[in-house]
Each structure stands twice: as structure tokens, then as C-alpha cells.
Image 1 (cartoon, rainbow, N blue to C red):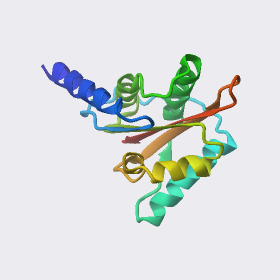
Image 2: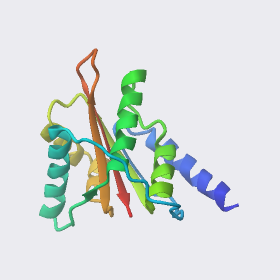
Image 3: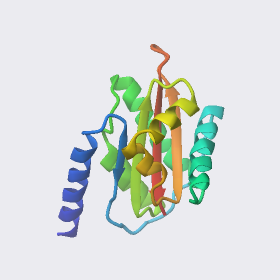
Image 4: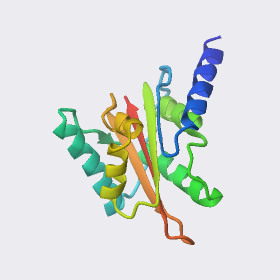
Length: 167
């Protein structure tokens, strides 16, 4: 019964997510973490700059800085690669990503921002801050985050996936 309720809530979150072109915030019910999976991830200067801009903004409005988790960045990278491969900009698979982060990292809530075709971290973060639903994730009740920025080798357009988690 609890599983069916969780699936119903997650389905509703996905439907809500599809109404947004580049942002999502979804609360997911708490699930006990089985283990905290640790992975390596090499951050590009653009990814580090984007994370710094987000944390600088959070601190400027009296919030704590978020801690990066490589595992969440790997999940972000997988979604960027999915969008590039399928030539789409969307939140497909968000429920699976969020459930995965809940189970492996012990997250209580998970949110996601995506962006497309911004040439600099500053441009992407400014766009997110100027969008109420994106900004809600940036200033949300989260403790950790991960990010990936990948470039489509054919179009040279950048894809951003930024996942937030409260752990």
C-alpha cells in the first residue's frame, strides 16, 4: 500500500514536471537508505563555477551553501547524455533518478533544474534565478547537490542538469 502511494505521488510529480521546460522540484516520500554509494566524478571548470554561483546566491540570501555529492553529479551527467542522445530537453526519468538518490544517498527530497543552450554558467544561473520554479529549487530546503554540463558534439549546444537533495 505504501509503495502504491509512493508511486502515485511520484507519477503526479512527473506529470507536474512535464509542464515545465527546464525546471522541476519534487518532494518524494522518505525511504530508508540502504547504503551511501560513493563514486568519482571529475568536475569541469564550468560545473564548479555553476555550483559556486548557486552557493554564493544561497549565502547572499541567508541560506547555507550546498555540499556537492559526486553520485548526484553522475546522475546529472546520465540525464545530460540522455537529452543529447535523444535530442530533447526534458525531465524524462526524473522519478527514477530521484528514487535512486533517495535509496543510495538517503535523501528525503529531491529536485531538478535543467537548462539548454546557455553558453556560460552565469547565463544559466541567471535564467534559473529569473524563473520562479527554478529559483525555488536553488533556495529550497536542500543540503546537497550535483551538476553536469555536457555539450552536444554535433550542435555545440550545452545541456545542464542540476539535481538538489536534502540528506
